[in-house]
Image 1 (cartoon, rainbow, N blue to C red):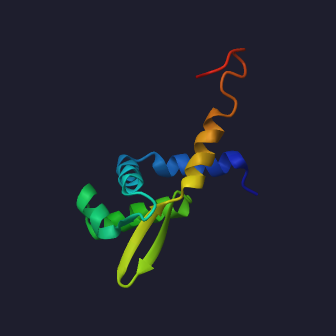
Image 2: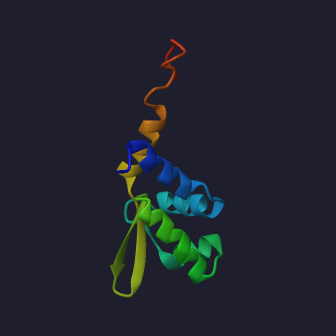
Length: 102
C-alpha cells in the first residue's frame, strides 16, 4: 500500500521535469477553467505526442485533470492536490529548530 510519502514523492517526481513545471505554471495562469491542449502546445512548443506524454504524467500524479469539450481537450489544475502537497512540505517546518518559520 502506498504511503502518504510515496504519494507526494510521485507528485514531486512528476513536477521534477522543466517541461512539466512549465506546463503546470501555464495551466495555473489560465485559472480554474484551464487551458486547451493546443494552447499548452503553443506555449511549450512541443510536438503533440511529446506534450501528450507530459500531460499524462501530470494527470496520473493527480496534479492536473482533463476534460473533453467537443473535440478539444482541456487541462485544469487540481488546486486541492497542490495545496496538500505544499502543506505536506511545510507541515513540520522548524519542528526541530525550536522556532517558527515565516
